[in-house]
Amino acid sequence: MNIKIFTLLSLGILFSTLASGQPLSGSPLPDTITYYKQYREIYEFNPDSTIKEFTVFWYFPENAPYTRFAYRNRNVYTSDRKLKEVYWSNTEGDQSGQLITSFQYTTQGLDSIITKYNTVFNTWYGNKIISHQYDSKNRLINKTETNTNAAATYPVSIETWSYNSNDQLELQATETYSNDNGELLDKAKTTYMYDASGLKERITQYWDLTTNDWVNNLKYEYTYPNGDNLTYIEQWFNFNPQTQMWNKLNARKEFYFEEFKTTETFRQRNDYYDYRYTKRYNPNKQLISDERDEYCKTLGIYKIRDRKETTYNTDGSISLYSEYVGNACENVDTMLTFRTNISYGYRKPIEIPSCTNILSPLNGQQNIENSATVIWNPVPAATGYKLTVKNSNGNIILIEDVGNVNQYLLNNLPPNTDICVSVNPYIVAGYENNTCDVICFKTKNVVPNCTAITSPTHGQTNAATNMTITWQPTSNLQGYRITVKTPTATIIDKMDVGNVNVFAITDLPNNTLICVQVVPYNECR
Image (cartoon, rainbow, N blue to C red):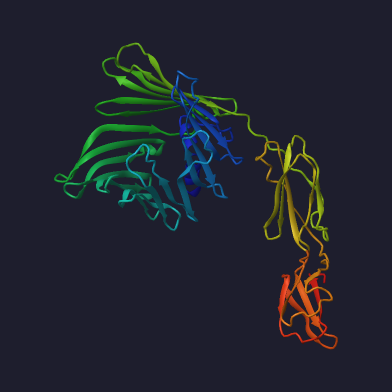
């Protein structure tokens, strides 16, 4: 369930435009979608195929079509590719935008969606929060939408689900409230009943706001004759509580299911209409035509009411989606009138180069100098490399785009430390091959350089008995040890004062020669 929710949220805008067709798995995603004489969407993707941003341009025939900027959405994701934030801007040069929607997750799935309402086009303002609740089996059992503004906080809609012991949906309920004041507008619930063959019937009840009671309004009965793939759905309505009887709507939906075939047909009819639906597929099992025919009683024939057609590229991606309207039962001649179409454009996919191999230092090598040159073999077609250096705790020491070279000098590496390096080639900057191996080596422990005492000075006389000793900092160390002596006695012997360059001492003997030594140390000394 979590994956489905995430897929819907992260690619929902794009997938809604692809709902008319069935792109083959693995086929490229379109980066340009044009709605006939309406608007055009331009998509930019991250290397993992999630949508980075999309921009909408309006169609204005008096100018160059589809060049009038409308708005831009920019998406930000979590480290595990879940949609985290959406930023919106209606200013063409604004690459940042304002945060309009944020997503929060738990280990069970989507937790909440928080949307800042757009006050430009609507009178209501504030936040819209959609919260999700799951049961112990990670099934969604509650979704609540709440509006908050400066005046009040109130629910807008509540959806709940419950399941039987066989993990089948048993009850689905909805409540809808006024967007202005939170007043209850509508309430409904649907109960599902099963037998050994599957779903037997479902009954939908609506809340009567006058009587404050449930009213049975609609029932569907499911039958599976002869155990084959044919399914009958019979519809009843307006249950009469006095007679305990349903009114039968003279309607039956007939569905026939089997393994893939190039043409599928089902029929839906009642006292008022008789429709025949026909779906046609290509050899790749992609829907190419979806037609609805209406039975004309006066003519005694079926005639086209509407048709949707989809064409595909050789790689299985969608090329064009078109809609047509028929003249139905108006006259004998069948006519199709073009309504609209959606065209899909594709950029050449960004090529990711193969990995490089780091030649030096070697993986696992010890006692590497604190200035080391990383060398790797060049990758054909690569135009640059991204170098990442971390310590064994994962703390970043360096991330650098080093350009189109095959070596890089690392300076001032910490001593006696495990260093891990990766080199990721790219053809287009920002689209590196992030699957390349990481090598790790250990720097040697360097004896720290000596320091110089800056106060008091060598040979100074009439020094105070209470003083502060200072010295110049040095490198490659863990700390300092200080020793203070007279010609006849030791006052402080190799005291570890830590990694500082100042030390206060009091009560030195009067008129006495004082000798001070500060020694830097690390694991080598």
